[in-house]
Length: 119
Image (cartoon, rainbow, N blue to C red; front, side, top):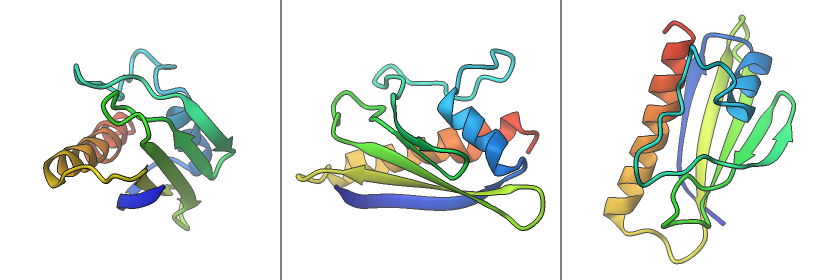
């Protein structure tokens, strides 16, 4: 698997809360954040190390080999530094598809999830 994208941003709650949101994204129906497009599917949890790492299966049926790794660390205050990393097997996606996958992860994690925490 090759790393083809990554981004780190802060999230307001502590790692344990962000970990819970990543391992059960639909557990709170009043705060939906994993709003998938027609060409996406819910991920499976491939690995979870509470509260510092979560690995998802692919969101994209056309790239079933893709994995999304989330690394969580305390931000030194009360929040979390959350890094998502997109991993794929060869052959790499074409630049257009790769840009789409990165953009979607950024929207889901650094916009939708973040907004459910009030930011």
